[in-house]
Image 1 (spheres, rainbow, N blue to C red):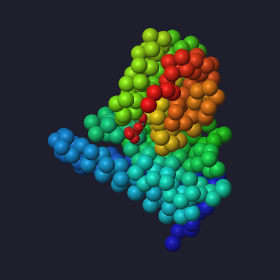
Image 2: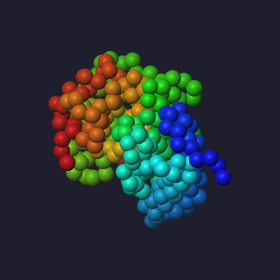
Image 3: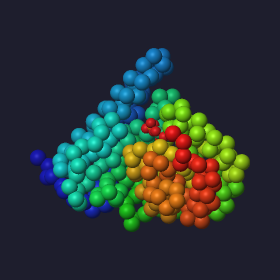
Image 4: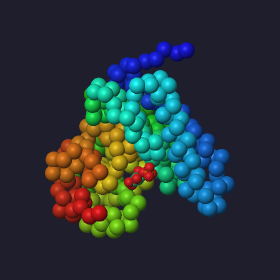
Length: 273
Ligand code: IPD
C-alpha cells in the first residue's frame, strides 16, 4: 500500500494537482472522441457534456482522496464536501471549464484544479485538455508555462488594450453584460470572448490578453486561474476595493487596472441580475 501523504507545501500540492489534472484532461479528450457521434446528432448535447463533466470530476476526486483522504473538495458537479479543519486543504475543481467549446470541439476547454488552505489558494494548475497546454502557480512561487515565468502584459492604456470577458448562462444577466460590453468596446482596442474563464485568466497571465473581467464566476472557474494571474503580477480583484467574487472579477496589470476598473464602475458592470 502506498504511503499516505499529508504534506501541505505548495510545491507538493502542485505536483499532485498537475499529475491528476493531466490524467483528467486525457479522460475529457478521450470521452469527447468516443462520443463524437452523439455530439454531432446534437440530440444528446447535454448528456455528452454532463457525462464527461461527471466522469472527470469523479476521477479527480478519487485520485486526490486516495492520496489525501483528509482533504475537502469543492467541485462543480460534486458540490462541497464537509467543511475542512483550519490548516487543512480544500481542492477546488472545474472538471471541464468551457463546456460549450467542449461540445463543439473548439480547442478551448480545460481542467482547472486549485488547492486552498484557510481560504487562500496556494497552488493551481489549468490544463487545456484539447491542446495539452498547461499553466501553473504556487503562492509566492510565480506563474509558469512550459518552463517560462509569466509576467502579464506591459500595456498601460485602456484604448490600446485587448480585453477578455465572458457571459453567464442566464438571459437577463446576458442582457446587462451586453450593455456593459456596448459601452466598453469603443474604449478598448478590442474584446475577446473565448468561452473558458480559467483559460482567459491564464492568457491574461501570459499577456495574450491585456486584461480580463467577468461577473458571475464561480470559485471553480477562477480559483486556479486567479492565482496564476496574480502570480504573474496582475491585480486580481473586484470593484471598489472588494475581493474578486461572483459579483465581479477583474484581472489586469497594476498599471492598467485603475482605468479598466473605473470604466467598469461607470458602466455598472457589477450590477444587474
Ligand atoms: C463557463 C466558462 C465561460 C464563462 C462562464 C462560465 P463552464 O464555465 O468559463 O467562459 O463565461 O461564466 O460559467 O460552464 O464552461 O464550466
